[in-house]
Length: 193
Image (cartoon, rainbow, N blue to C red; front, side):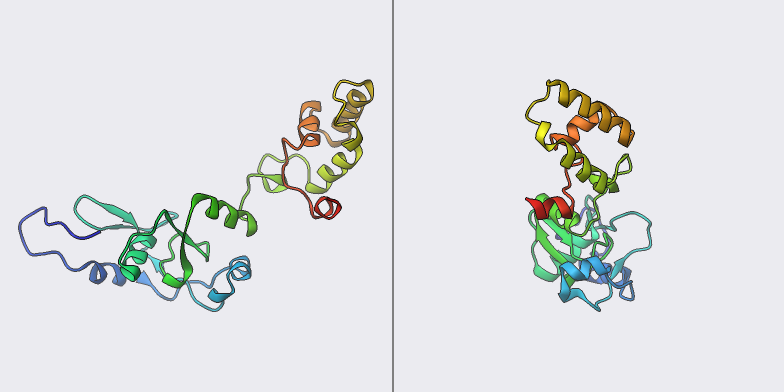
């Protein structure tokens, strides 16, 4: 992230001198979910970069390069770029406070997102969900004995009845029973496993 002189004129100001004045150190506190996962950030305000409305702040590092602000903050603190990614404990993409950042992989990021229930990809939190987690648990409880026998008359009738009862297609009922859809297990299901 070092500066490269690409034009004539005065040398550019050091990175830190250009970066930190753009940071608001009176940002919001982390969410309760974030503090539950990372107690060390409790009571620490987020340092919000810039004034834009995008998910992540960006900063022009050199004439040719723009970087995400939290990655620049990591570099300024450690002297090296985060590998492979720079993640947020506080779940605020524009936060650049070093104590709120950590290195991790895409898998770490997705796991963190699911633990804090920020995912809307599975279960009843999905925008496309037509049944609740409790209804899925009920379907699985009723259909468990039949999953091994997909073409028996009893299974076909069960799928039809469950589809009618819960207002979804027979195909979707079958996917739920085989755990190909609505993959999030409810607490009740996890206790019974």
